[in-house]
Length: 62
Image (cartoon, rainbow, N blue to C red; front, side, top):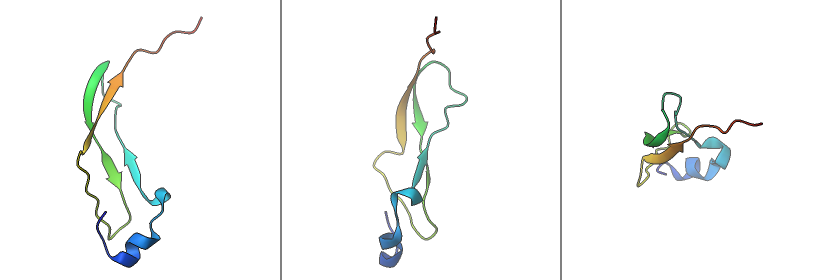
């Protein structure tokens, strides 16, 4: 995370949100882009901006 020291000190885990959109993916393994939301004035930097997601068919319950 990059930003002014005072801004960074105020950040809590609830201020950072990582999401992936898997709504249009079929079964299989996919590399999906991370969407990151952080407070204004703060920048983020990760080594990897994607995650590997495996989608399988849900087992039917009997």
